[in-house]
Amino acid sequence: MDNTDYGIVMVTTASQEEAEKIASVLVEVKLAACVSFSPINSIYTWQGKVNKDQEWQLFIKTDLTRFPTLEAKILELHSYEVPEIIALPILKGHQPYLQWIAQQVS
Image (cartoon, rainbow, N blue to C red; front, side):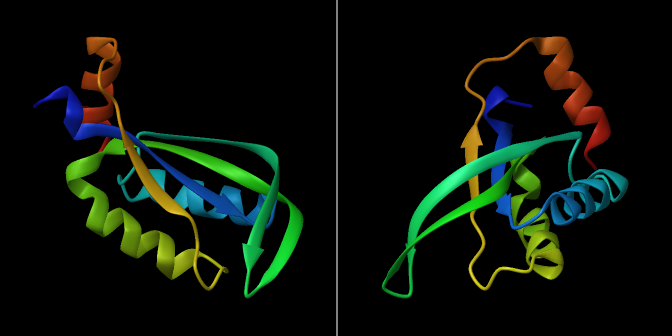
């Protein structure tokens, strides 16, 4: 497996509860090896209006070859009409950690 098969998928949620729910499900169904999340402040335009909200940012460590299935599961669980779901490849990483991701995601 190439290093670029691994990545971090970023997702924002409206609440800590929603972040925990999505994180738990993704790990339980083996679409993510680990999900870290924390509160963030976001300023964005939605439907022509500038909004300022506190959200929760998820950092989902996964095998990007599973992205379509991961994206579908997030959409199933997410409350937003158009949630942020973006993938960033891991270009380099500690090999034992990357192997651990591979072992956790199936």
